[in-house]
Amino acid sequence: MTSKMRGNDFAITREDLYGTSAETTYAGVTSFMRRKYTRDLSGVDVAVTGVPFDTSTTNRPGARFGPRAIRSASTIMAWEKPYGMAFDPFDKLAVADVGDCLFDHGKPETVPAAIEAHASNIISQGPALLTLGGDHFISYPILKAHAARHGAPLSLLHFDAHSDSWRDDDARVDHGTMFYWAAQEGIVDPAASLQIGLRTENPDTQGYNIIDAPSVHERGIASVIEEVRRCLGDRPVYLTFDIDCLDPAYAPGTGTPVCGGLTTHQAMAILRGLAGINVIGMDVVEVAPAYDIGEITSLAASHIAMEILYLHACAQAGS
Image 1 (cartoon, rainbow, N blue to C red):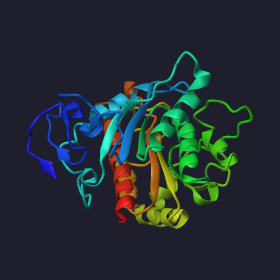
Image 2 (image 1 turned 90 degrees about the vertical axis):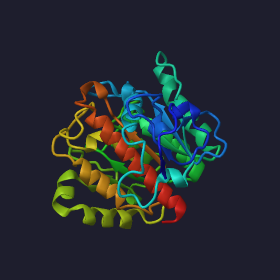
Image 3 (image 1 turned 180 degrees about the horizontal axis):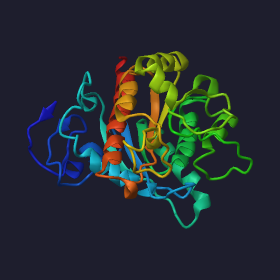
Image 4 (image 1 turned 45 degrees about the vertical axis):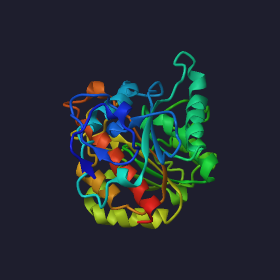
């Protein structure tokens, strides 16, 4: 439950990993949702981490600043339970912010392994992982870590303007090919996975189920929720949300915007309606704050991250 304002800098002064506490929104250390910064994962149910990597982008760079921007925007909503949720996720989950993944930007060939090792180190100690990107390539090494932990193949629930499954014969570090490799290597099962919001052409679907953006608009939220549930069942799900799934009117601060996307309401309502699916790992990526207007993209990303965290909380609670 939300408490009265009784302190500040909860990112470093918080003693209890549970609960929501009020803190001045415009001041203090900006961890994700004012959760405690710690590398001690004892008793932690979910670890939040940032991966400030954006050198696999094909258009505008800048997503390396995404984790910082999402953390900052999250302080606006960190003082109370998100509206309409059946319970406060922080009453059910001990959530800590473990800071950012360390890698050597001067040795780009080593970055994928560094990201995978970072994710593996966290989830091997028990917590689930919520990752803030960074460009979308980061999902690939993180997926590999989750498949090793939970067993392959996983189901992938992928919100995006792009399929990110373009054929690749060179194992490139590229934010448009990683889900091709995830399918080819058996990390995910495309037949039990679903991509939502697409609006760029790629005839070679790799077998992924697709609900493109026009279909979301035409069919409506309830129909989309029903199909997602039918496709995923009770399988372990890795959920990845590229912020460019949203229309540029709602998320201008991203590297590869495409018109005709989902509204913030549609995305959040679909996620809220999926309570009970077995989310075992999650990320929000491609926030590039240099192109943002009034922080609306970072704010949308922080809200979406909370909706995804709520899905994980529901899964753990058996809702």
